[in-house]
Image 1 (cartoon, helix red, strand yellow):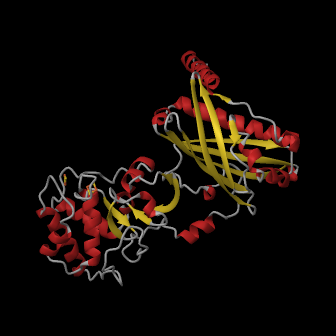
Image 2: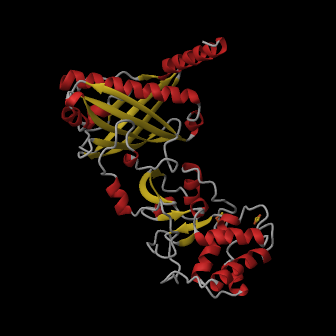
Image 3: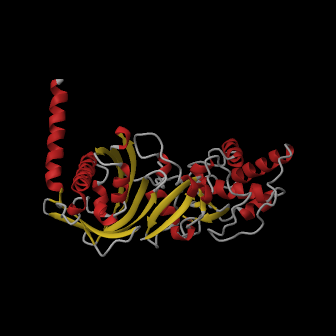
Amino acid sequence: MKQMHLTVNGKAVYASVEPRTHLADFLRESLNLTGTHLGCEHGVCGACTLIVDGVPVRSCITLAVACDGASVTTVEGLDHDEIAGALRAAFSREHGLQCGYCTPGMLASARDIVIRMPDATAQDIRVAMSGNLCRCTGYVGIVRAIESVISERKAKSLAPPSNPRTDVGPAGSGRAGPTAPVSAAAAPVAARAARRTEPAGAAGRVPEARRIVEPGVGAPQTTVHESFTVDHPRGEVWAFFGRLGEVATCLPGTSLLGTPTDNHIETRIRIKVGPMVSEFEGAADVVRDASSFSGVIRGTAEDARSRSSTRGEIRYALIEEQHGASTRVEVDVGFTLTGPLAQFSRSSIVHDIARRMAGAFAQNLHARLSRGRDAAGTPVAELDAGGLLVSALLSRIKRFFRGLLGR
Ligand code: FES
Ligand code: FES
């Protein structure tokens, strides 16, 4: 797995991907951006075309890792784009689509033509659009739609962006400029980095500003929140959170692989569900912000037996209470499973189990903090997910009967 940061439709995304993953698969399967369509998956039909750093690219033959640091815009990110809006209306008016399968790719390529070729003739448009195939409409309506948008812009004297792109560069070429879609939500990398160090927000959940993966874009499939108070001053709790090995082993079934550094740790997490045993091995990195007493632990792990993998993050924020005598710890635990085990990750039972795992983490953390450094080597019991499963089922059954009996 390889970690990368990129901007998708104006939102910062932190992701861990296999190097062989195509951009289209990453967007569709990890970020749920299914507006990017796949046809041939060989770079021929153009259905998967989207915009990377202002350049239309075939996302089926672009590796996601090649887009590290790039700005990616899919059809979902063109909702408020002026030119794409005019093109959508024109496609509709000129019958430029039927089933719509090719349309996201058509719009990405057509938008590039409108920006780059303000004097394009019908013939120019046909040549420039020859990399996008449509199986339904024929091309007359599509060409007419693009022509009409170019004419409208001329009639309204809408100048092309200054210094429009004239050459085509590879994905992630850093050519994002006037041709890159303008989004109010877009945030340059520097601004995003600065945002990560903003002071803590009000009490409650870990502030949104801490979320490297923005909600809705690559957010973990399962997220649970826990909050508890410890009778220790915030400085003491903050120091404890700096001892990564101790914090990590508060997660049931976790053991260390090697010696952790201040901001990197390698662990094994063993989870047992009945006869099934999963052993996830992986690594995590930590970003701490002393000014706001908050931090993010992000990692990935793989289970060799089931060939499943997970990426997750634990976000925490420490809030002073009782005039500094105690500290409330707000913890968000989020994770996404991929591979054969992923089929379980959406069930509500798994949410219950994840909540109990987060609860156990909070309890262990509380105990460790209360017992101080003496408890550092205390082994944490392996997660008995079978037991949790039974208890989760029991509480569900209880809820069901309570609802049935109106109590
Ligand atoms: Fe990418 Fe056909 S699906 S070019
Ligand atoms: Fe159906 Fe183009 S509208 S493939």
